[in-house]
Amino acid sequence: LEFDEKMRRVVAWICRAGTLAEQAETAEGVKVTIHNCPFRNTALKFPQVCTITPQLMSRLLGTNISQADSIHRHDPYCSFVVQRPADS
Image (tube, rainbow, N blue to C red; front, side, top):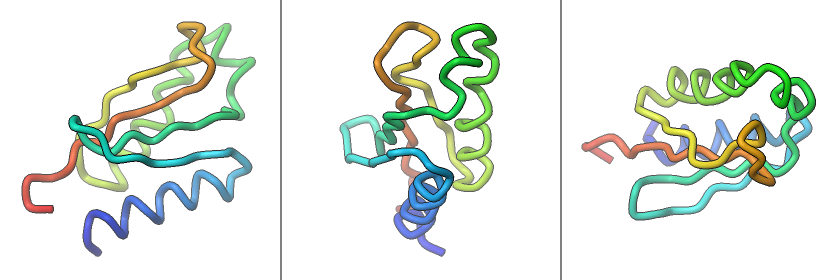
């Protein structure tokens, strides 16, 4: 699959898990924002929980991901920047 199709499927999968997720193009890559993280209460106590989603996305997409916003840092939502592969 092409990167854009993989990206679309990953965001759709996140939404099917009961979260409100969206993606937007940025200068750094594709920003994925999760507005209602299902791990919110746990992440406030155990920040390492916040590594689950970006690690999974990185493995599924085969690219680097950085966390831009995080509820454990008291941001209102979580967001990740997915770097586009050089060949996409």
